[in-house]
Length: 322
Ligand code: DP6
Image 1 (tube, protein in one colour):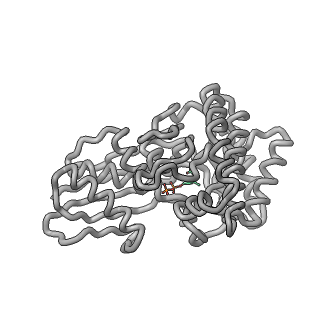
Image 2 (cartoon, helix red, strand yellow):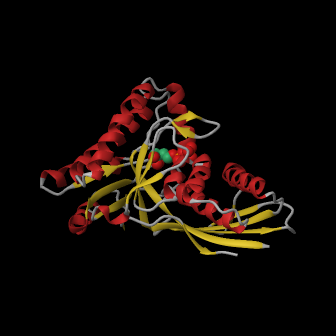
Image 3 (spheres, helix red, strand yellow):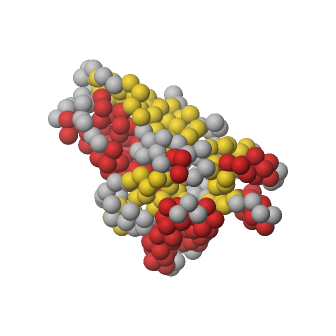
C-alpha cells in the first residue's frame, strides 16, 4: 500500500480560457492568465492498494460516479501506466471552501489528485509534468499547480508561474450570489459555444491580444490596466457564449447588479475590477488597502449571499508522502 496527500488551491482566470483547439489532448484555443487563491483549497488523499478490485473516489464524503469519476480514473490510469502498476486506488477529497458555493473546484481537485497520486506511485514528476497531466484532465487545473500569477500559453502543454504571490498587494473578493448546481458545466458549454456561436471565431481572434495586454500590465504592476484587460476578457467570453444557440447564460440579476456596483466604486476612485466564470458569482480584484470598503459595497447588493476574501495563494503542496 502506498499513500500520499496533497493540497491545491483554486484559481480564478483574469484572462479566460474558453474553447479547445484539440479536444483529445484538451489543448485550449486561447491563452489564459490566472491568480491562485489562498483560502479555497482541496485536500486529496490517494492510496494505492493491491487488494482493491476497483478504484473508489469520494468528494466531501460522497461517492463519485459517472463523468466526474471517469475523469479521475483516466488520470489514475495514465499514472499507473507510467509506474507500471496495476494497483487500484482509494481517492478521498475534501474541498475547504468557506461555503459550498459551487465555485470552481475542479482546478484545485485535479491539481491535488495528480500531485498525490504521482507521489503515492513514486513517480518523480516536476511541476511542469504535473501541470501537463492536470491540464489534460481539466485545462484550468494546469494553472493550480502553481502559486501566484500563472499563465497557460497558447499551445502549451503546461502552465508556468509568471509572477510570485506578492507581486501585487491585492485581494480577490468572491461575491457569492446563488448556491446550487450549474445549468451546464464549462466543458460542455465551451464546446456548445464552439459549435454554434457565430461569435466564437471572433473570441478566438481577439483573445491573444487581450492576453498580451493583461500580461504586460501584470508584469508592469499596473493594476488598472490589468483590471481593464480582465473585464474585457470576461465580457468577450460571455458574449461568445450568449451568442451560442441556444445561448448560455450564467449571469443572474445579482451578477449584473454587482458589475454596476464595481463600476460605481471605480467612479468614486476605488480601483476595483470584476470577473465572472461559468457561474453567477462575481469576483472582484482590488487593492488590499481598499478591500474592506469594497466588501461593504458588494455585501449591500441585493442577492449577494456572502463575500469571501481571498489573497494570492500557493501552488500544490505534498503534505504526506510514503
Ligand atoms: C470559465 O478548465 O473547467 O473557468 O478543460 O473542459 O475541464 P475543461 O474546462 P475548465 O474551464 C474553465 C473555464 C473558465 C475560465 C478559466 O478558468 O480560464
